[in-house]
Length: 129
Length: 89
Image: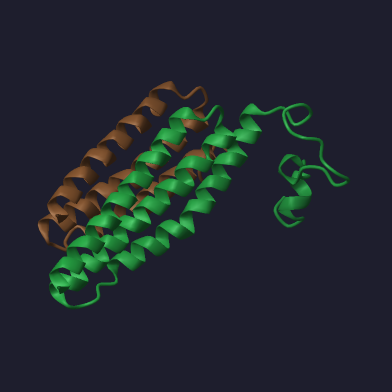
């Protein structure tokens, strides 16, 4: 009974996780431009990897009868770094390829903080020079 | 049953890696290519974890963790370089 449960759960998690990875890669090929393309892999691939790591954790829980925490470490790391990567990619793309006057929607009263010019001397402070 | 699931998983992950490679070749901007490499790193971590399940060994988790760290650091370094023209100022 336990054997069957083990097989069903681990197989289902592997299939679902890899399908999510495939959907993420497919979305990255199909979507039209980078800002929409960011959405597919950074969500679907991490969800797929989450499923795979859960499958691995359950598999080693069933065959070794002890909980291993390495997978949790990888999952935590991936989930923490995925939004940072997406944010950095979007910021670099906006600065390199988008005209701040025409390429983005009109901002409200305060403008787009990404495109704000920082006064270099003011940002660096008076002691440096 | 797990063996069939693992075979299916390897096939799906290989296809995903090929699609990422297509984006890496085609991507019009440099940021598309960085995104493709980042996704490839995530998929390769999946392949390593799947191989660990297949071989019934927990040796490969350290490799997966190292891949995760280096993938994140390299993506951030690429973006920083694209933004500022320098990695460490």
